[in-house]
Image 1 (cartoon, one colour):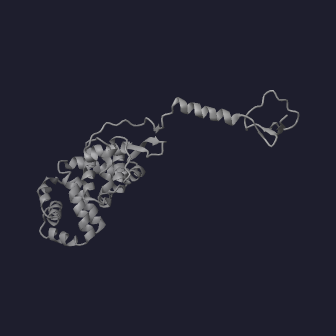
Image 2: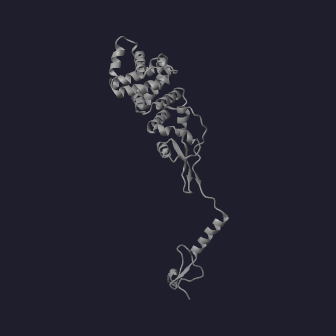
Image 3: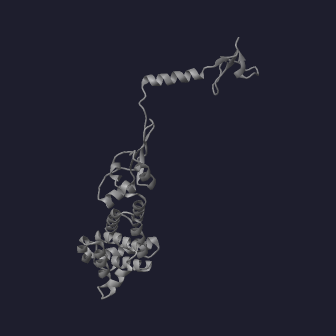
Length: 272
């Protein structure tokens, strides 16, 4: 099956048909699920189903249809008109045919669970809960974050650092933002970024109320009055002039009062 054929299947299934007819196929083996989808798209024309099914012999195509049918199952309650409007926005923003764009989006996701999240983000866009720009950005997060790390996102509703390694990856993708810099030698703390929060809210269905844009805090050790006295004494001691080898040396940046400069450097005044 050519890429053009796959693109047409995607575009037609989203724009033109009711998906209720494939709902019952969800419990069937994946091959039967694919056949149900093709039957829906071809109008069950005699011979068309068998020929299309034979064309899906390549593993890559079979894997795509496994992902795509999973994606469609989550959209069964949306109408063709709603999905058509969604596809129009996709096409306008991506400046490419919607079938090509969505085919690529679905195919690049490496875990079947991500297809369900992508479908929920699609529904959020259809209902106007997120912008088309954020839809593309959130798909980028889905694509770049491994599923094993994606599952850890809910931990970051509060400032958190995971020594297991997912923190750095989630931060690098833009799903987290640094909220606390630990100046005591420990680990910095991170919290969900705006995109990370949107991914949880509209992709996972986990609703949070986080505040953003208030800067980064720095955690310092508490300084006592005794600590301040020690620091002050050290500063005073360091600013005093010192004798060395019979000469009086002034620290750089200090001013010697009550001494007339007779042309010699103040850093070389002899002790009387």
